[in-house]
Each structure stands twice: as C-alpha cells, then as structure tokens.
Length: 272
Ligand SMILES: Nc1nc(=O)c2c([nH]1)NC[C@@H]1CN(c3ccc(C(=O)N[C@@H](CCC(=O)O)C(=O)O)cc3)CN21
Ligand SMILES: CC(C)C(=O)C(=O)O
Ligand SMILES: [Mg+2]
Image (tube, rainbow, N blue to C red; front, top):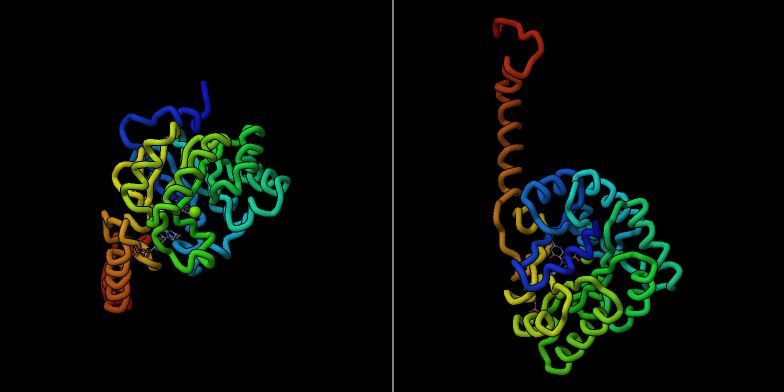
C-alpha cells in the first residue's frame, strides 16, 4: 500500500493522465464517476465559483472550505489542493503550516504550488515533511500582475530554457508531478521529455504526460476569460438558463406545480 501521489508519479510513460478541477461535492462526484486520475481543487475557484476576476483574492480558508466538500465526493481519486496566493511565499514555517491545513482540515492527498527555482526550498521542506508536492510553472495566474495578463510564456529561447531548468530543479527538489501552463507546444514536449515525473499540461500542447482542465470550462459553465486551450464538451450555462426560464414560464402560467409534484392534490381546477 502506497500513497496515491506516488502511484500517480509512476504512471509517466503510460496512457496520458487525466486531471480535472472540482470545487464542491457535485463536481467531485462527477469527476470520480467519470474516472479521472486526479482531481484538483484549484485556486481558479476564485474565478469559476466565487466571481472574482483573478485568483489573487482567494484565501487559505476558501481553499480548506472547498477542499472539504470535494473530499466528501471522492473515494479513490488523488486529491490535489492548490496553495493560494502567498500561502507559500512568506516563510518556510507558514508554508508548512498552510500545506498541513490542506491535508489535515481539507483532506488533500497532495498540494500544488506555483513557482520555479525560487520555491524549491519550500518544495524540499514539504516533501521532507511527508507532503507530496505538485509544481506549477509557465503561465502562473498568481503572478498575473507581473506577467501583465494571462499570456503565453516561454516563447523566447531564453525564457523557454529558464522554464525547462525550473522544471528540472522542481523535480530534483522532490515534486511528484508538474503542471506546465500556457506555453508553446514544443516547450511542453521538451519539458515532458526532460523530466522523469509526469508533466500535466494546460495550454501546453499534446505531448505532455497528461492534461488538466477547469471543469466549468469543459462543461461550458464559465463566465470568465476563455483561453484558446479550452474545449467545451457540454453547454451547461445555456442548458441551465433554458431550464430556469421554463420553470419561470410554468409557474407564471400555473402549469407548475402539477398534481405529480403536490401533496394530496385537490381533484379539480376549481379550487383556485
Ligand atoms: N475558468 C478558468 N479557466 C482557467 O483555465 C483558469 C481560470 N479560470 N482561472 C485561473 C487561470 C487563468 N487562466 C487563463 C486565463 C486566460 C487565458 C487567456 O486568455 N490566454 C490567451 C493567451 C494570449 C497570448 O497569446 O499570450 C488566449 O487567447 O488563450 C489563459 C489562461 C487559466 N486559469
Ligand atoms: C488550472 C489549474 C492548473 C489550476 O492551477 C487551477 O485550477 O487553479
Ligand atoms: Mg491554480
């Protein structure tokens, strides 16, 4: 018996790994029933379910709250929870305390944190403390103010080389897997080939060891930005508006509730 994160790490080189975000009990149930390999409680929850325009306002308490709901919806699926803005930036001690909360209170199997070579000391400390860490480089949304928007990263050769080296150092520091976001397909391929841990891409092309998408994006239930890498597999927002409209019409036309949805229905329409 070994941990889910270590089992995930070993699956590099096989069938591509599938990760999807979840933010609450129903999205977790959907992910697990669909048979994904890992679920991520992403700090993207700030945008998808809390209505913020970035991930910056998301707090540790937010992450714990949503992780607990997702945990209740999962049985055997690896649960990774994002460290939110600054949760791993203040000190080693704060980093350990925050990651510890995600495991102890949130029920996470592993944490994910944004950053390259500048966070390898924290990756090593967490790993030594028994906390599996997934890295995240490239388009790192917590640095949106510095990046000047959600822009593709690593297009210049020097920037690409730096990201590749960041990946190498994160693996060396102990990451069991690495998310690479928003880079040209060739760089996603190069990083995946260079590392021995699974590289999970989002907007990083077809040659990564796995893919991750925000569940609201793939369900067609997002209201925020629409990155090029998103493919919609359903149209939930449209379907939901249609359903609520129909309900409203039926109430206004006294078609709902009908006898099937009433206790001890009266026999005639004359009661009204
Ligand atoms: N719903 C949702 N899906 C996500 O994938 C996601 C979030 N929210 N929130 C956090 C970050 C933000 N993400 C984003 C947001 C926008 C773009 C975007 O519009 N990118 C441009 C690239 C422009 C360029 O060429 O540099 C695009 O057109 O795809 C990318 C990633 C990814 N993450
Ligand atoms: C998109 C993934 C990688 C993420 O970090 C998030 O959902 O917050
Ligand atoms: Mg995130």
